[in-house]
Length: 305
Image 1 (cartoon, rainbow, N blue to C red):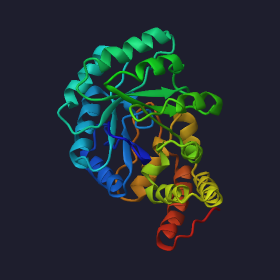
Image 2: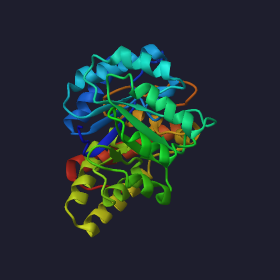
Image 3: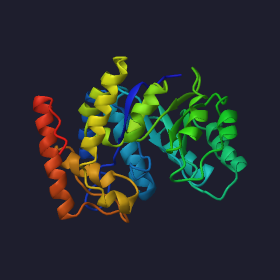
Image 4: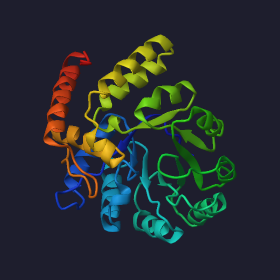
């Protein structure tokens, strides 16, 4: 089993104004992130996977795999409400160099037993490794006893752990083993997940500020808790400068991340409806953050206000 280590960028999906796959922007984005050593978590909730049609998701996944070429680990979202839908997506990308397919159980009303049937139905037939996606902010969550049972399946390699209750997360983190990897998520929790011993954690902001998160990971790996804590506080303070209007409407930071990427000349700012992009006022704030981030890249000094 291939282990994922370090920072994993939650990859936004570049789109044209018509909401088709922007393959040129996808190429630039994957090159940008892979060149910075970011592992890739694509077509998840912040990647707008649930807002895109089947054709667009397949086109983007295939392009990402082609451009990445195995340089860094690539997990692609292939989940849906049914086993058949997921298997049809996996079949369409099975010949690509993809390290795994992550699946989130979207239906909150089904039982843990049905969630287990969903994963087994996919994992038993998938030619690509399957990763569980535990996200209690979007679903009712996967019961821990189900994750324990599924962790022994030869084609299920691990779980992405989302949610903000440390008491719950601790039980899932204890399932991490050489044959079943648990990795964390969320900008604000990365420091905590690494301090608890996980080898990898994902971040949406790492997609537009990879240099910042490389610095954080380096500080954590230095084994100086005080140095890492200070770096984490500095970075979290900087990220609070990003406007949150679109985030509070959309539930994810795709609009904010894409606008920063557009300012870096990597891809456009379009998000898929019904999500909204940033307002003109929000863009002005984002542009000020971008200018100060450019100053950071030149000087190493991060302006916090």
